[in-house]
Length: 69
Image 1 (spheres, rainbow, N blue to C red):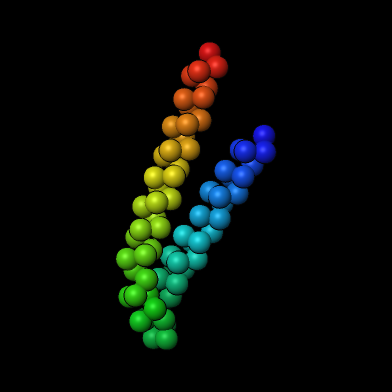
Image 2: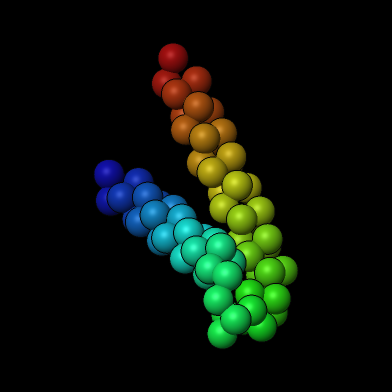
């Protein structure tokens, strides 16, 4: 139970940071323009890693269900 809780905390933290960077990218303020350009690659990497993590978590979940049967 404790291990699943910490895995979910990591996933939630990853989503929060991803949403934060997406929010910064959406803002069309001139003050953030340079910041957005410098972090656009990082945003794409974070999105890709979050998708990989979600896929792995789902795979692990269904694999554990299959082993219980």
